Length: 473
Image 1 (cartoon, rainbow, N blue to C red):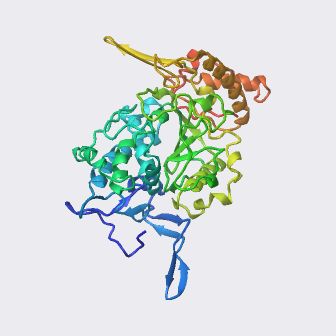
Image 2: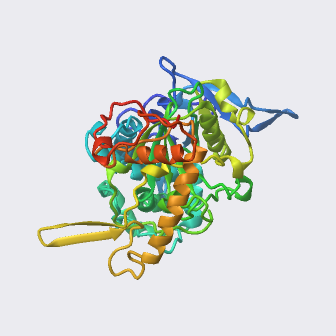
Image 3: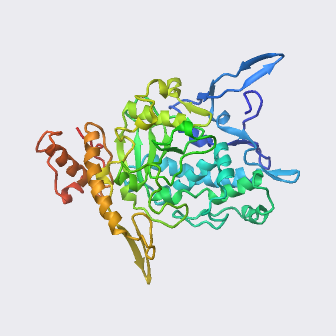
């Protein structure tokens, strides 16, 4: 790691090769700065020990640095061809991914229904960007080195997934011919694999339940880590995993946390867990797979939930525990969530189900069918297509229905008095909220009142989207 005074962090001149490669892009880092702030607090959780003239000392663990000096490593993406080197990976591949990702993150951070998006690309470009961000870190590259033998990974440059296919610059297609000549641990081999697998998680992310939570009412805001796309599974403890291993996204209980800025965070939950939060977390979800074409209705994205201070601190605690070495925050005290978190017991962090979406607004669909002009396409809720022996598994569907109904009631009791998310009125309106209120009133947990009486489905779907986020009070 290059320290202050050792490098010129200014932008490279045209034709000049770059060497300081940011694995957490600077534009993303700036989203976590307060207005008017240009530097934030950067914490090294494992500072180097320096020995000089027989005297040893540790470097400072906390620094006050700008994004240009944080989350980077020299020549991380430099490709080597004999004695020659090139930064084409940094300039073209990540340049392309970042351009699309910056726009997607900016729009999705403010998501307030379908009408708040400029178009489908704002959503479509986010999963591939998240995949690239997940694998582009030093830890992600080391993970690729271990898992590049995945049996179901699609070969480089032959990827077609749920999101719009990324058209890679022509220079990268030449690397297909070169890969067979490289050793498995050759940096060029690892970088070329990265370009083939960066969309690996898109299918399972697309098929999950999306919720964008906010921290506008919390004094504490979200932090940045060197592992921004963070996996959390309550039964997989940080101490159980040796670097660079992590939870498996195929597991039912693995949630994805991705802060989008100071006061916005995306939480992705497998549908199977949303239907049954008591499911065994380490079992694989139905039809878990890395690559396949899939579809998502944007009206099902949940939004509008304001987290309280305890919730934000717990998310920051997870981000810090799953970070490799570095985190950063706009305020110094935010770097130490372990001092204020309600519990440090990994299994109990989500006992109140605060990471779960609003279960009353999770659609219980069984199939999506599209077609026209002589073509047809279908999949069930777990992405299985006609011809799959498990397609529309009626037994599983019936079991899921019962478990989902039980879970909705348990979730409502746990979340009484807390803000809950809503979905676009185009999709469900406030039908779920009305049914939840009715249930809590029947249980004596909410007072009976004319204002809280559930409306008809027609009335609830006409509530204007600008109405304040719904609360269970």
